[in-house]
Amino acid sequence: MYFLKVTVFCVFLFNSSLAFSQQSHQDVLKQLHLPRGFTISIFADNVPNARSMALGDNRTVFVGTVSQGKVYAVQDANNDGKADKHYVIATDLYTPNGVAYKDGSLYVAEINRILRFDNIINRLITPPKPVVVYDKLPSDQHHGWKYLRFGPDDKLYTGIGAPCNICKPEKAIYASLVRLKPDGSDFEIIAHGIRNTVGFDWRPDTGTLFFTDNGRDYLGDDQPHDELNRWSAKGEHFGYPYCHGGEIVDPEFGFHKNCRQFTAPVWKFKAHVAVLGARFYQGKQFPAEFKNQLFVAQHGSWNRTEPDGYRVVLVKFKQDDPVSEQVFISGWLTPEKQVLGQPVDILELPDGSLLISDDKLGVIYKVEYKG
Image 1 (cartoon, rainbow, N blue to C red):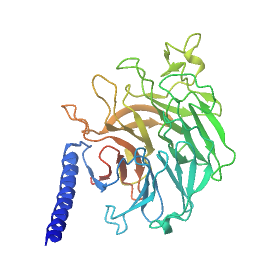
Image 2: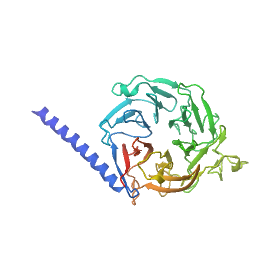
Image 3: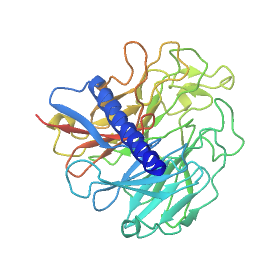
Image 4: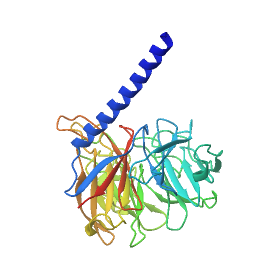
């Protein structure tokens, strides 16, 4: 009889916790503001520290983390618009933030190496042992989190952050953008002077690569700007640690440097908003004016007197040039400065809806246009 009482009580606690979590999520959704005609819902919950996302086959979404050491997969198996299956692909990895999918294999970027899980869609319940693709990346935790994407050339791209707030790294691999073949060969550095990029995408109609970059700290509330950069040629230098935002000479490392010798950002976000995931919209569900425009997640400031960010913005383009920025989703930062959530990455589904990960709340949102 005692065992029965304990069991019933535990079930009651579990169900109460689940109901509280669902209610909390709905409370957050009520605070979010979107343009007229758009809706937002919870696509998947119970994804602790949800960060970067990649789309696999069979409506499978892979999710990396930084504080859990886990990689997840969530699946909308019944195609009702909400994930109904949840899998743990890997555990105890070294900050597996980056995920990418191609030809049946899942690629995962830890801080110091890139792994590959083959035939993963058929092995979600019992994932295979990963193959090490490349293991010569720096192991520094500071700005070590990797974003991972396949480019139009079918190569893997990732960034190697600076191992500090502001410094001149001794090795050229730091503060860089790199690429390599899926088998780990032909590793090359294609750009320098990038403090910490954790989001990039290729504009669909031109194939041009754009990447976000987070500005240095401790130069005040309003400088330097976070950046959107356009990569054009191998060997380009984007200024770090000598020059920020294309115009601010660094007080520690910028002596005898001219900002004009570096590639300036093509768009400047507000300082410290922590721009992360970026995705050009290619679908047909949203109105036509969203086609080939860039959604950017602003994770939110941690060291600003007045908090800023905590939103998703839309950067409007004309050809390869950004021309404006507008708020698309806000409300994760309340008027009372309470942080309800922090958007990280953006992923487009085949039906043209968008997924947005939130590492604070441990959920993935789904944004749809209803008209």
